[in-house]
Amino acid sequence: MRTRKDIEELESKVLAPYAMKSRDAGARQYSEPAHEWRTSFQRDRDRIVHAEAFRKLEYKTQVFVIFEGDYYRTRLTHTIEVAQLARTLGRNLRLNEDLIEAVALAHDLGHPPFGHAGEAALNEIVREADIEFNHNFRSYEIVAKLEKKYPGFPGLNLTREVLVGILKHQTVFDMPGANIPREYRMEGPTLEAQIVDIADSLAYLNHDIDDGLTSECIVEHDLMESALWQRAVQKIGADPKETGGRDMFRYQVVKELIDMQVKDLLKATYERIRKFDFKSAQEVKDHKGYVAAFSQGMHRERQHLQRLLDEKLYHHWRVERMTTKARRIIRDLFEVYLKNPKQLPYSIYGRDQKHSRRGTYAVICNYIASMTDRFALDEHRRLFDPYQRSE
Image (cartoon, rainbow, N blue to C red; front, top):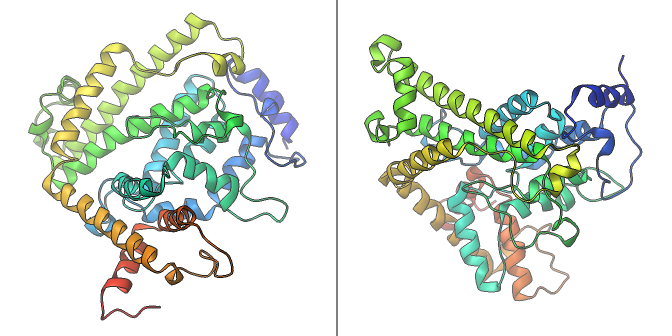
């Protein structure tokens, strides 16, 4: 039976020189004895999986709000897909899969209800009080302070590498906020964290295509302007009748899209690794700029396909209607709480302390951000439907 030390020794033999080794993990915020059987990053992953915020991802929007149907991806299924893609990439590059999985499972914990529409609505409101809402920082706050499962410290007490990976998560849709704690500002992400960022972009682009086609907000013809899409179709055959029907055709094209991008990413990233000749994980952290990236050609093709999705799917009238409704619900909830904060639960808004205007905005923002889509919809009905019971 393997002990933690056995696993750490195996990592030193199997992982690449530039991979982050568990025995070199940065300090936790609060000192804890090492576990006998599990490495530091394995413990981080397990703590995230058991977090309340992780369970809530099941009822948070990806693109299509939960009342649109059961098939569409949620934040939880998206997170699982990101972790799966990132681990596959990491395995091929001989990286630390436990660190990858921990960062991947935590990267979206801070999303408010209704996805990016909810985040935009909250940010727009709290700017009135000179506050920025950033879901990366919110994810950090959840694991660093808000989850309460241990008597000796707040939060989950994760390792430094996981916290930096969460705070500096970066994609087309996600950018690090301005409020990164000082102790992490100058530290670059590990290659494992960079791989999670790329896997997130991969999952977004390709699985939004899948959901878009399923919803019929887009059709195959809408994507034929994309050279990347055309190549995927050509590889599997353009006639859906020959590929087992429309659903099978869609699945096979999306699968081919992912495969082409993964192959390009692995090749381009490994070429950069060899070029810079990294001898340690610290050298990757110190390197200016991302090492994990697509080739220039693939990057341009992905950008074109992303623009098509932005035009055809994210601004489709059905999606616009969903996002407009989501923004309205967020604003309605915020305004009614702001008018009378004593409507908030006792555990959220203390009656025995004074709250500044900015402090009240922050309390309401954090409360709404913690909601699932379903809870936000129910709360809106309770507060605005005179026939709904208020409890």
